[in-house]
Length: 347
Image (cartoon, rainbow, N blue to C red):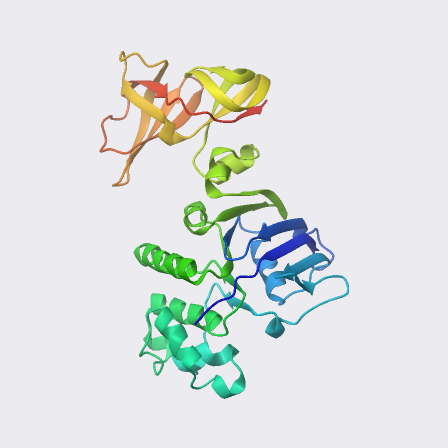
């Protein structure tokens, strides 16, 4: 089985329901051929609505959607879902309980191939379910059902694959394993993919680019490391990971803070809040010479790392340490900041 790699372009798409406020308001994005884009945002920001517009299940009020240079939606064009060559995996997987696995997978194929086809066999083998075509969906585990839904979307050899929170119905350990398997599969296929998630970690792991939606608009789009390191505004900074905001005074590309001088990625002047990620802070017992003096309020050990909440004057900061717990509640500590350039937001 092969997959074509057509680029996806969305230009100024808007959508409202029942004369209400826009669910999507001028959304534009570009997904290069073979790339994976993660639509990341809180509930109600328009992620799933955008996916439905891409698939043709809904029509936008305005804007243009094209795949591989072919216009699928515009003010004068609307290509129906079955003619778009776009596969979709729904959040609840939407398997047909009365059809066996093979017929579920073959549902989107031409009628002569729906019961038996090399493409069904190839799709099942691709997701690690070869030999299970005779089984009924309710005899499969949650992870296997998710793979059936993925195989069904891939069987017609789509040019674009859409995934709507595909791992949300799986328990934590299975979700990580399936996510890795799907990631490996998407990379090997090279199919252009758009998936919806509200999980920042998931978006960063799977997405070649991350598109952050907020109130129906694109708040920021770019490679995961860029969105994390250089968020467009304070809201994005908080949404894509734990963020500390330390008061300071900026002059050009430097800021003075209670943690010492900080290099800024972008020039700024006057009072600011400096973004400090938890992994860039270091703790030592009070008196070791760190510029910031604080008190440990909470210790959260999660196995692979320890997180501390530290009261630093009027500010509480989170510190992440890739080690076993070394400090206890109420310990007096010094804080030092790694020399990592960051961003600041005027106040």
